Length: 105
Image 1 (cartoon, rainbow, N blue to C red):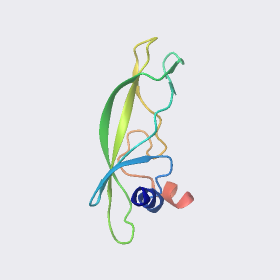
Image 2: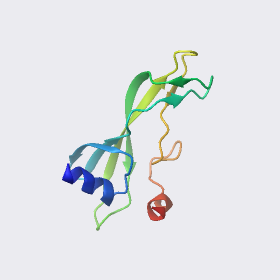
Image 3: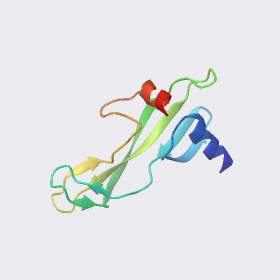
Image 4: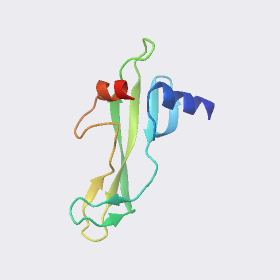
C-alpha cells in the first residue's frame, strides 16, 4: 500500500487506483461510479468492457514512465449507447498527459 501511495503522489495521479507497477510501467484505473449517458442523459452503472490506453508521462527524477490506463466503457440500458468514462488525466483523443495539469496541482 505504501508503494502505491508513493506512486500516486510522485506521478500526481490523485483519484486513480494503482492496479500494478512493473518497472517503469504503471497500470491505473478510476474507481467505479455512475455516469451520465451523453445521448439520452440517463444515469448508468452498467459496464460494457475495458480498454487499455498507453500514456506517456513527463520524466520524474530523470526517469520516463509509461502509464497504462484501464478505461471503462459504459453501456446505457435506455438507448444502448456505449461511451467511455470521464477521465481527468487526459483530454479526449490525447495520448500524452498535459504538462500544465501536472504543474497546476
